[in-house]
Image (cartoon, rainbow over all chains, first blue to last red; front, side, top):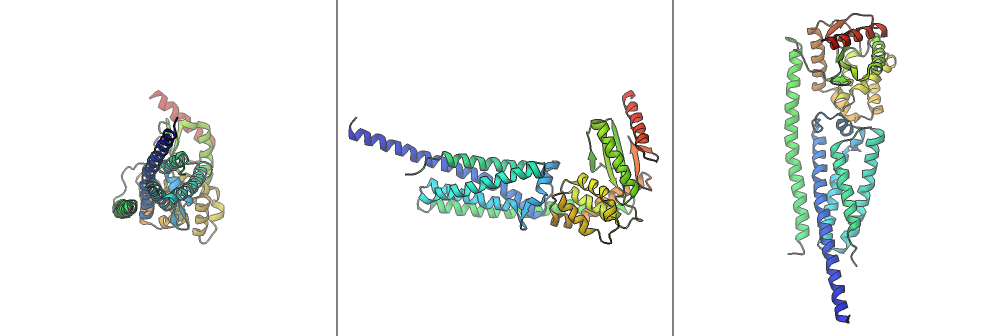
Length: 155
Length: 228
């Protein structure tokens, strides 16, 4: 194999990695947007005092009406909305090739992952009830974590 | 232009989120206000012509159970606390064959009866009616003697992991007061005068409510259900 061929192969591998990074980050941005919609809806329902969010589901009411539904007077979902928006911004910037955005995305998603684990623990072992909106948000966060881990690092 | 595109996209999403959030907030506020309006009307109605047959708000047990035990109770009534213990034991014995309905009937003679009813209804809005129901009966001797029960009820709400600020707000709300009034008025329309008043499959049960007597009545209702 000639040097030119080797360089061409390396260049093609670099291109496909760059494409993969763009695709993974773009998917992460879309997932973060879905999470943002979920968290925004819950935040608004909490602030408006809407008790009908859960419908007839009692476990859902237990979770969303619990003491853990707010932290220092701020709806817990609002923290989620801010986190999802940050993740969306970082993923978008990373998809457009901003080098520091990926590090920021990793930090945000790691924090969201840890927070989600804590919320799942509360639902399972403290409140003994699950809310579908919270489980959906947990699924989005796990998706984001998977995508962030799977994204090839930039050289 | 391409350099700025991601920032434009991020700003657009931020504006869209805030905008749609604000619109949703307004819509939710309207629906909450609309939901509260009939409750306020019911408060007025409760003192007027009387309540019609109503769907039970507080049900425990299987929906297809052959026997339904319905209680009109007052949380400050000592006999109600004793009966609650008996009923709980019976629920364990009969399992899915027994369904329990609780309806509020605070007696004016009990200083904190109405406050206790409001506390359980406020807990109910957070999905913890039965937990508060059990706790209030269990600790009846403690809170009944207090001149001001609200701090105690708030501590119970905390114990049940409720959102306490929301509990306090709901406790004082018209919606919760109307809920209590509606149930009491329904009791009056069915001839309830004292607490506890029990119905088994809509048949009035006369006191005393000993485990043996209630078991006998439940068994009779169960065999009646089988034969029908």
